[in-house]
Amino acid sequence: MRSRRAVLGPGLAGLFLLSGCLGVVPFRPRAYDEAVRVEAVDVAFTRDGSGALTLKLQVGNPSSDAATLTRVDFDLRVDGRRVATGEQVMGVPLDGKGQVPLEVYFPLAVARGGGRPEPGSHVVRVEGGVVLRFGGSERRAPFRDMRSLDLAWVPGGESSPAQ
Image (cartoon, one colour):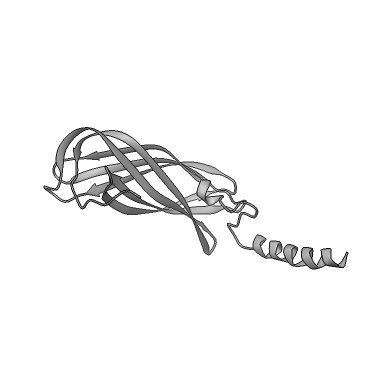
């Protein structure tokens, strides 16, 4: 009986300590890895060096604590070449255990003259994260998506292998 108390006592004390930290999801260590789903990706580039990335995300709060969605960051690769990275700051409230659809538009700028007309299907990979703020602490929920998209113009750039 005494050995059970010796094991359960510190374990329960640790659980109570964790419950005081905002944004903690006990017993689900991968909760934030599964909190964001990429619903749609749209990418367009023009010959003048401009472009746009539109992401439609479904963001869930795995914690029972209310949060604020503070920013979204991304890394965009086309055919294995890094094309753009960026971040957008926002302030979207998200209830505990709630979900919110999120559409994010990123204007893109790529090097002029670095592109080439290559109409057809290209492998587009986007990785990033959504940051949820719980009081004074933040948790990042990552996302990743890869799909084949028809692009009329593809920016050039330094080739780097997709990981």
